[in-house]
Image (cartoon, rainbow, N blue to C red):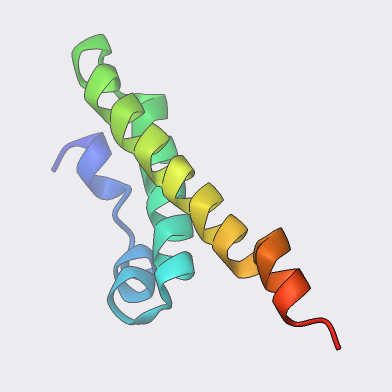
Length: 77
């Protein structure tokens, strides 16, 4: 087993399998970050792209949870 494969801990698998969408994305971000630290130059390119995508998804998820200005206006009493 390579060093990169060893970073998939049982905790990571458990969170991705049973956690919320946000928890799974956060676990995936941590997993990809650990793999990137050990990656060869060739593998680092693909991992960086995957990590960027996960970070973008987490940012969009956070924006969705915060709501928009329109949501705030519609919910005013």
